[in-house]
Image (cartoon, rainbow, N blue to C red; front, side, top):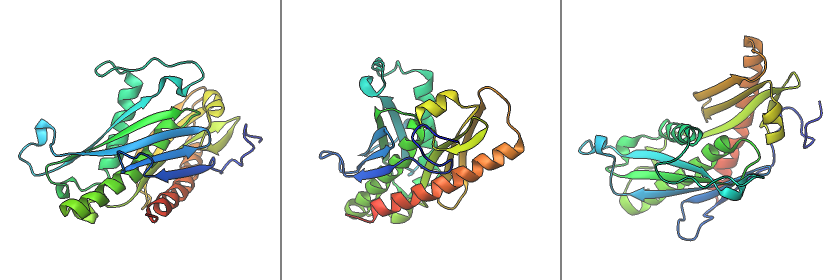
Length: 239
């Protein structure tokens, strides 16, 4: 099959992760996957949500948003307290993914908040946000280790995410918007570096899929996430 950008079925879009992208928030990363670009920034707050007060545990949470000019038709800016259901769902997904690999008992009574802002959208914004957010989180934990004695073992392992789907009857990896729009099946997969699933979101858009299709999609996702984890580690290996 011929994909819109000429890739093989099992090929990721071009990926680049730029650490320390923001001057005022060093624990930040710009992730680019094809034409999708997401800016992820981690901020440490010396407080926790009310339900954790007095527990000695920390918290990791995320916010997600799409800038008005990130899509071909201007998207209205979302205001605090007036975000739509899709945004809420993605924020919770990112937070769950990051907490799955964080030992919050080692953070102390502090919160790490990851802001994920979509600058350019061409499919896979939530999965790119998770992959980039991990890099920002790792930098934040590294800074806490230097400045506050937090253990580097707070982060148990990397986590990354990728989209897969069935397009024109074929399983493909890392869908751009044109493929996502026309996919028979659309799936987002979040996995740890050790190969364990954090979340699988799969939907039949036009036809149901069977266990053989599911196995093929998960195998593609595993392959893509292994590559993304290597890119995360490579980015984090450079000061």
